[in-house]
Length: 196
Image 1 (cartoon, rainbow, N blue to C red):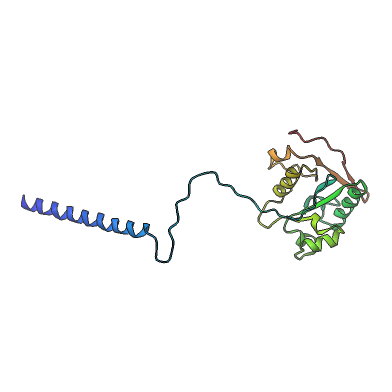
Image 2 (image 1 turned 135 degrees about the vertical axis):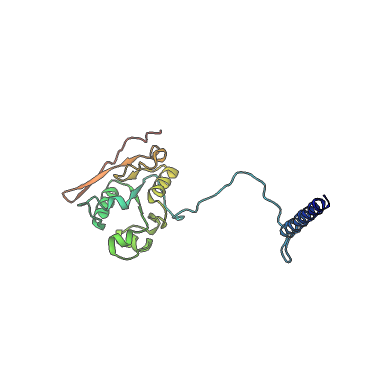
C-alpha cells in the first residue's frame, strides 16, 4: 500500500510540474517582447478590402465601350492577330464609340512573342494609353473585363458568353461581332442586359 501512495504522489508531482511549465510558457508567449509595443486585439467586424484598379487612369465617357481584345484578336481566321483588333477599333470609332481595349496578361507573347506593356499596345493600336488595360498575371481577365463594364455601365464587344460569371454577365450588354471578307461587323445596338 505505501508503494501505491508513493507512486501516486510521484505522478501528482509530475503532473503539477508539467502544468507549471505550460503555464510559464503561456505567460512568456503572451507578454510583449522587449522593444515592441503591445497591440490591442482587433475587434471582429466586416473585412473591407478594396482591390486596386488595373488601370486607375482609365478614361471613361458616355460613348465608351469595353473591347475584349483577347477575344476579338481571334475573329479573323481563328488565329490571334493585331489586324482583327485594329479593324474592330476602326469600326467602333466610325460609329462614334470610344473603345477601352482590355487584354489578358499574355497578350504580348500571343501577338509578338515578347512582353508588351500598355504604352506599346497603345502605339500598336493607335489609341491613348489611358484606354488600354492589361489584366494582371494570375488573374482572370474575364472577371476584370466584366468588373470594369458593370462598375461603369458599359457594353462589352466580345463573342465570349462569360459562362463562369452568370451574375455579372446579366448586368452587361454584349456586342458580338465578326470579321467577314476583311471587314469588321459589330452589333452596335445590343439588347439591354438581362438583369435590368
